[in-house]
Length: 100
Picture 1 (tube, rainbow, N blue to C red):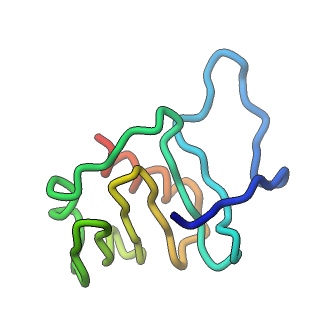
Picture 2 (cartoon, rainbow, N blue to C red):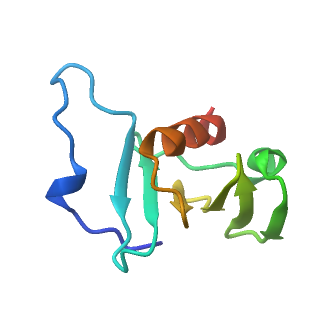
Picture 3 (tube, helix red, strand yellow):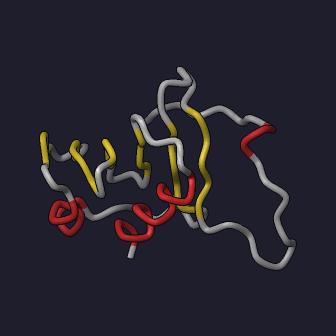
């Protein structure tokens, strides 16, 4: 949805036996970070809705609001956009809540 591009600076050295669960990249516009789960799972928006405080907009194609103080857009195709967050560890914690 965001149209992420591959950026060598975003990739980290990983162990060959334990790949990262999430893939985090800057959006094409460089205005936000896009996160996907490596296994490409879909997101159930109905279950995710309760994590938002507050939930600003809810459609069949996206949930927009705040989770743990961060502006987030969640798409059912499995993509999470972080509009202002730059802390990748915090992104992973929020994503784990959404995917679990």
